[in-house]
Amino acid sequence: MLEILIQGRGGQGAQTAGNQLAAAFFAEGKFVQTFSTYGGARRGTPVSSYLRVDEQPIRRRCSIEHAAAILCFDDSLLPGLVAQFADQDTLIVVNSRDPAEAYARLGNYRIVTIDGIGIAQNNDMGRIVNSALLGAFAGALGQPSIEVLRQTVEQTAPVKKQQNLASCNQAYQLTRQAHEVRIQA
Image 1: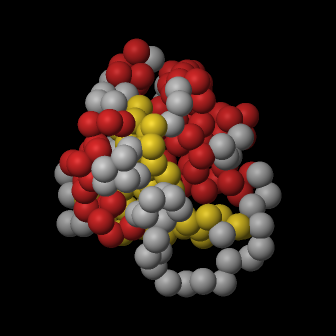
Image 2 (image 1 turned 90 degrees about the vertical axis):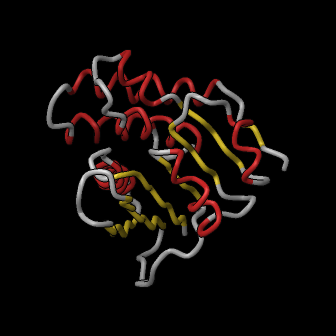
């Protein structure tokens, strides 16, 4: 079973991204369980979206204690995520202009960085990074397929469908081309 954590701040779209990712896995025929937590349910407070994905029905109903993969919308949240949910095998995709080496102080983790804001702005999305981060996450994780993810983004994006698709695809391609950097503490 693949357990995924997506975390950001209220208003960044982490929960929307979690729902889109769950829909993409479901479209691939996987069993999916998703749930969210809200900080103070206001803009700027930490929000988390949790996903479980499996080939078999998911019977587990508890919180995720260890994530196989983390998508972090705001790198200021990363130290807490790593301490609580990650180990050396956890794939961590973080929205950051900094290289993965900048996070060496956190320890020995599999970190992939992507400039989600830069990609979003390049595609006329302003600071809306959902689609870019989903593309990068799928590229780093190797699933869901970019074709299914693009279909999901196209079906669920409320506005600027072509810009969302371009952001998703650009981030996916950049992540697939780049080499993951294993940070040595």
